[in-house]
Length: 256
Image 1 (tube, helix red, strand yellow):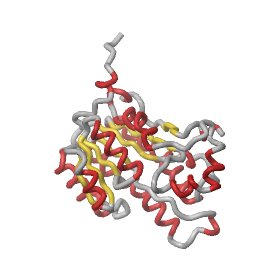
Image 2 (tube, rainbow, N blue to C red):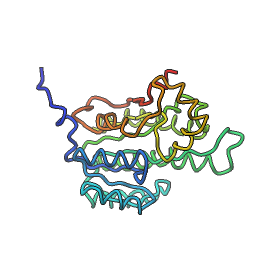
Image 3 (spheres, helix red, strand yellow):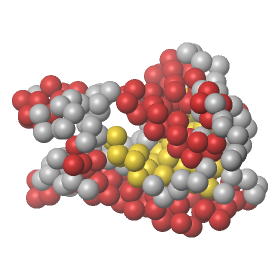
Image 4 (cartoon, rainbow, N blue to C red):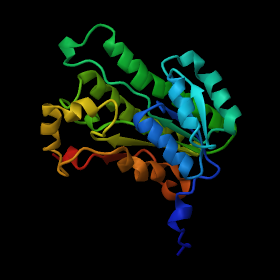
């Protein structure tokens, strides 16, 4: 039997260099903070650079990067800048996303395209560019794509958002299958309704309160509820044999 690795070593991310998108607020900010607190060097990327500067000021392990993930032509230069900060990237957290639109027939012109550009196209292009770098240097790395409970549960959000997250989930599996031979693990986290700037108004509404009653744990999630799953998938020691997986963090909502 192999030696047992203590938990503090199992989740020690020293030596990892992570890029986290959508890191100016909400889950993205939390992801950056948690990774940095466990030893990783983190490049926090988003459009709102004022918030990124505030985040970077909290830890020497965090650097700010201005990035609009929908500007796919800017991705190579952005990755170059990210690697100048801390060295070659080993971890990508595709967190940037938007929720827009409503019922399909009521979705305004342009909303579908914007959701797909942000939630799907950006994941495709960033992941591919990241993987190309890992493959070129014959290294190893990991990608964590943030999907959603609604990827498999239509009716809980706008149709465009649910469809985009279903695409992210399937893309994660395709990436995992293609890149496993190159030492790249790809997994997805599917959060339920987590308190954040994106969801707070809804969760406080009568509809949101009624939805919470249908969650088996009878509560919405907190950003901290994702910490353990993030660390598991980020650590090659803890999840070196896990790829192509989806982990629901939803209080059992998918069962309801």
